[in-house]
Length: 283
Image 1: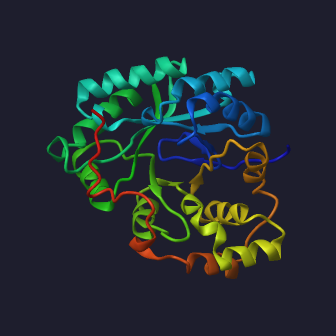
Image 2: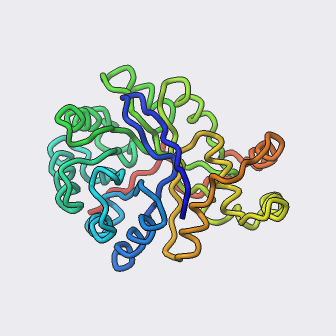
């Protein structure tokens, strides 16, 4: 399937494909085939995490697709029980081993956990700086960091995160965090880009989709693309994998973009936990 995925240049000079394929909540038994199919369709960016339990299957999917390692952008994330520096070092190597690669294109702190580890995510970030310095992580970033968390990193560390992966969708546009990122050269990645499916039945989205002859998911994902977000929808359904890839042969005009943005419900639209209070650490 022909499509050209734009690259976004990060603050470290590396680039990231703006559209990726996410594997959150995909059962490990289904992950290899889903990744292979996504790569066959044309995706070249796969987003996983230690906490998803399917890194090994992601790596197998890449190998099954027959693509060279350098042709696939791989992202993973540090699990919440590995924030202490030595634990983070061990966990990162475990990710490389599971994926059977000697580097990651992007590695993130999954959650800031400000009420855990005496609120110390700074020492964790400094360990990620080590991974970038030795080349085992081409780029490093964070996930679910609020503006005060980012400001603390700016004050106490040397490397600005390349990306911040946050919940963002039409029901919670998360514009304060996005604006801080834009001002400071931090690219926004949107997780839960369709609000776990909640926005797909919204009358405004349905109306736009009908007018354009597109699916509601395509409309919302295109809204993300035009906002400049990196987005990585997930699915194991072959038809949906292909549909979600077809985002670059149409555009939303300014009025349509505004209609979607006005669906914002602020914090009431959040589908996941709040980063200021989320404190889950696996046993």
